[in-house]
Amino acid sequence: MLCSPFRAGARFYGIEFRDNTTYQVSFDAMAEVPRKITVQIGKGFDHDPWFVPFMEPYTLALTQELTTYEWMFTKSDPQHVTGKLVFELGPIE
Image (cartoon, rainbow, N blue to C red; front, side):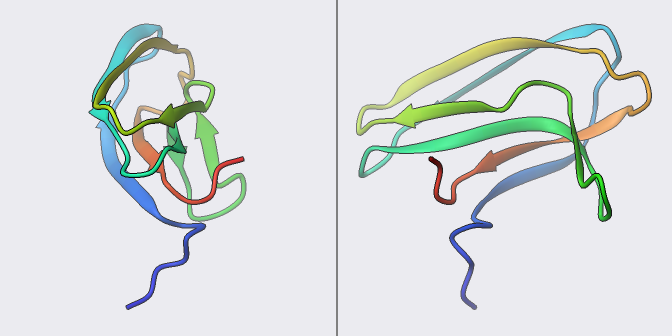
């Protein structure tokens, strides 16, 4: 099966996020060839508006050296309790 490079990525669904709570995101990553990826956390839908972010998208420039990436965000969207963590691996400008 072929996968569109515009949809490539990893998604983790059903994560519970409490309102007005600060979360730490931390992971190690590297690439065979330097490239960018974007990480997003929010509520996904199968209809418009498609996605409600719990944080601003975080774009990283991966290198050939294993690096730890880490940041914090505070969820402030009382309307949505569950969300998803998305690693977008398609073409990133």
